[in-house]
Every structure is written in structure tokens, then in C-alpha cells.
View 1 (cartoon, rainbow over the protein chains, first blue to last red):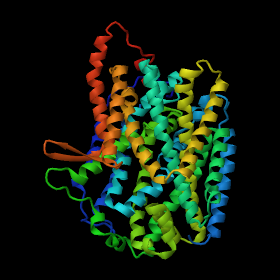
View 2: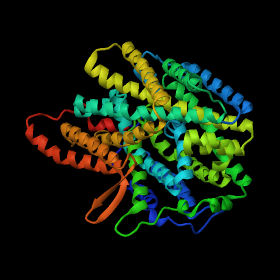
View 3: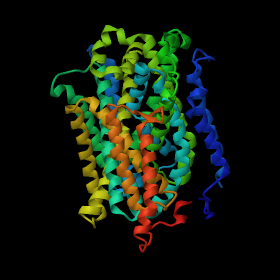
View 4: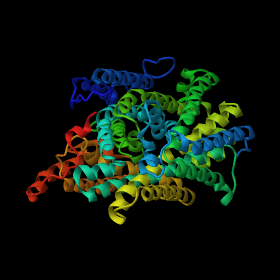
Length: 68
Length: 515
């Protein structure tokens, strides 16, 4: 884009940030509990919704860090 | 069934009329020559970040999702929330693999996954396998979208017998078929914007208004029976519900972008950058899906299952009626009309994209490859338009004449089948290491074993894999794609040795995969 022909290399260390979002949601023992509640919602549910936001932020960080 | 809800019905029909007009008007949006397949079937690859966001969002978060995920929460509880980790892990996958695929497809004019595999591996039989898998996996998915329409039409109080009962569905189908035929991918892209605004309004209204009516979230979760509130803690020597939950999320995520309609949405983006940006922006939908899953619990707390006025609906549609019943119970009629229109229109968008994607596959990888090798551009686009009609007609006939449960079974099997294209398509975007025939054998092994495993557990998604005294219940699709990879990896050196003299056929080069 923007006319630059700089080649994007295949790998960036920033991609390791993605590992975080895999681990925090794919390991259910981490969050399969009701306590602590937040505004009446059991931990199991609000934690995973929070992970959506964390995942989006991490992806945005990787995007800006790897974009030319 | 309850009486016809005239206010809701009027708003529903008005909104439907509006998107019908929009679908036809879309032909002139970012105008292109619709006699070219990439114009009709990929919108000319001209959609920027925002339109792609709406299109892919409208494509992946379907009406059926919005009905079925809360229905699963309503019926089975916590396990339904696997949809949240699932939609979290899809985005790194989207970010890493699919811009590469976009660049190479853009460079070589590929429109389908089959086109890419044909070019990358030079094997038309492998491309045929990819195309057939895509078409077969997509068909029941389209049928399930029509179920979404059926449920809301039923909830509006429209009922009848025989032909009259199916009439609303047939009307919706004719509308869908007509604007898809005339406008191609531009129609669902423009309608997706309306649909998503309606869905967001509905979802946020639901999670704000209903808890207030029901006396707060604390009260709602207190009404959920304890076994449904959390996953069951696994016993000794098994990963139990934890393994099932995580593998369902991961396997579904790996399968998602292999579906033809996902790829069509991605390839219609105007740049690889637009795809990367979307990987960070699409979680907006994941958050909403998570909120909607909670709506299943609201339905438990509201007690709609025991309300006599909804008994007929539950009898006809099962737990899929939970969300419509809750909306009828909680919202004024005019808003019910908006909410149901959101679901109904939410069915048309993915159904249109799916039929276009299946048509592209047939046209490019079956018809052009095996029947008419040198079509003109116009013939090719015309063929795709006809096939998109046939595909939708097939789905309609299926839903009218075959029990809905079969469509659900087939959609489950479709997930197991489509993931078998992962080594050729997703890994193919990174490496040409695999031997094409080895990929084909791996694909076949995955399909056969996966189907057998699913049949062995009465067509439920998880299979209790037993290994040395331990049991690992997990998503069959994930297990069988691992088998597929192992087979392909073992056979690759074997097949390469057997045909040592042949040069590697690959029309793409490394630089095609970058900006």
C-alpha cells in the first residue's frame, strides 16, 4: 500500500501476543467458577466477555505493531 | 399458536420491503459489469474496511446463530458459551492466514478456495474435493437460515396448513433469490448494514430492558438451575466437559474461515489491510453474541417455557422458540417487529452469500474444470447466477419436506467435512511442502473417519476418544483434522519418492503472498 513495495516478512515476534488469547479462553479450569460475581453475573460469563475485549485489544496492538 | 400480532407484522413487512428494494438497488452500488464473475460473485473486490466489517459480520453471525446459541443456553446452559471462546480465537487465525490468501487470490484472479488449491498444487482432483466439500457443507447451512425465518414468522402468529404454512418462507425465498441473481454480492453487502444495525439495537435493548423487567441480573442467574450455570467438573481419568468445551471452540474456529461464504466475504475486501483491520474490529460481534447467549438465561428466568400462550411455539420449534417467546413476552409489539425483522433479514444476508459462494465453487472448479473448459466471461457469470438459484431452491425444498433436525445433523457433519480442507487451503497459504495426492488421501481419511465417529455418537458433536485408560471427549472435527494432517504428512515423502522425476507444480510464487 501507499506505493511502497517493501516486503512483509513472514514472521513477527508480536504474533506471540496471540498465544495469550488462546490460553486464557481455551483452558476452562481457569474460569469455570461462579465467584466472584460482577453486577450479578457469575465469573464464568463476565470473564469470557472480558476476554473478547482483551482479544480485540491484543489484535489491535499486533496490527499497529506489524503495520508499516 | 397465538393470534397474529398485527403491529409487529406490519413493521416486519415494511422492513422486509425496504431491504428488498435495497437488494435490487445494490446492483448500481460501486457499479461494475455484473456479467463478470468477480463483479457478481465478489463485488469487484472493492469493499473497504467498514463494508467488509458489516459483510463478514453479517455473514458469520447468522440468524441461526442468534436463535440457536441462546436456545442452547436455554436448554443446556453454560456449554453454549463456547461460542465466545470460539469467536475469540477465530480472529488471530483470520489475521495470520487470510491476508496471505487474499494477496495470492487477488494476484491470480482466484475466486474460490478451489481456484487457489488448483493453482497452488496443480491438481484438479484436489480442487474438486475442496469444491464439493464446500458446496455440500454449505447447503444445510443455507437450510438452517431458512429455519430462522420460519421461527420468527411462526412467532408473529402466522400459521396455516399445507401450502399456506410454507407461503411466507417461499415469499422470502423468492425475494432472496431475485436480488441475489440480479445484484450478486453487492446485495447482501448493502443489506448487511441494515441488518447489523437492527441486530445491535435488538441485542442491546434485550440486555438492558429485559434484566430491568426481571428484577436484575442477579435474580436472573439465581433462576438458572445450578447444573446449567457452570460446566460440569470432570471426574477422574477424563477431561470431561472441559475438553469438550475447549475443542468445540478451537475446532469451530479452525473450520469457520474454510466455509465458502467466509472466504467469499474475505476475498471481496479491497486489500489485505482491510482484513487485518477487521480482525481487530470484528470482536464487536463476538461481544454481542456473548450478550445474546445470556438472553437464553433471561428466557429461563422469565419462565416463557411454562407460559400457555407459547406452548404451541415450543412444541413446533423446540428451544429455538425461546428467544422469540422472550421478545414477545418482554417487548412492545412495534419493537417485536423490529427484533424479528432483524432475525429474518439476518437470515437472508448469509443465505445470499452462501448461495453465491457455492455457485462460484461450482462454476469455477466443477463446470469450468470438467464440463466447459473455455466459457466466455459472460457465460461463466450466467452459470453462477443460475447455480445460486438452484442451490437456494434445494435448501428451500429441504426445509419444507425434510424434518429440521436433519438439517441440523447435516450442518454438524458439514463442520467435520469442511475442516478437512484446512491442510490444503490454510496451510497451503503458507507452504507447498505437502504432496497434492497426500492431501487428497488425508482429506478422504478425515471425511470417512469423521463421519463414522459422528455416526457412532448418534450425530452429536463430541466424541469420547479413549486413550490408555483416559477419556478425552472432544469435537470430532478437531480430532479428525489432526488425523488428516498426520496422514498427509506421512504420505507426502512417500508419494514424492514415488514420483521423484516430476517437478513441483505451483503457479504461485512466494512474493504473491505479501503486499
